[in-house]
Length: 229
Image: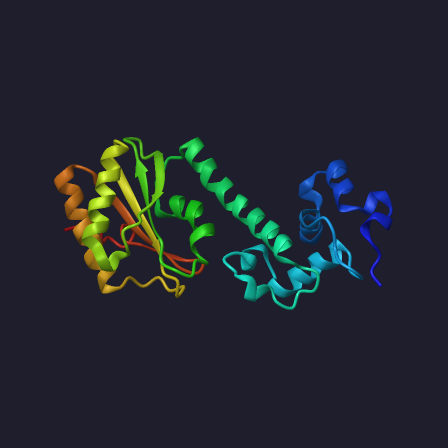
């Protein structure tokens, strides 16, 4: 039977190690154990954490899951699953909020991909985001566009430029994901990008790029020389 963490030597307990050495020195299972706080009958929090990591392999694989994916993990109820999923979401939001606060200058597609890839690469549905930039190519805001997908291009284009004018944006970058993980642009992607680019010219708002995010890879229309009439 697994020994409860409170019975361990003080220097080996995850929480005490965190305070003594810093969170960066803890293993993934030790960090998870702190979040879980307690194990269950016959299993410590650290063993429960190891079981979670054995099943999913990484924190990334725990994201965008539902209850069915967690079945079979003894000792994990809805409350503990919610704690883990909330912690992962906090990590994502921290990265996005950090980018908004520091207003990094966007010079290449990779600059924006580094910010949005962690959130968008594992989504099960298509999500469309727009990055609004000032005259120094620094981020003003990043917003979700709610009017459908690129298959309904005109409502999206109207909403994008309404928000761009509200933010006094000089230029924009559009980003959406392909839930399949592939990054090859569809015909709808190409048509949408052309229409978006031309609409931007009419409003004097530059459409710098349209980026498609897949499974740890991306496609940039600008990098491929496709941002044109």
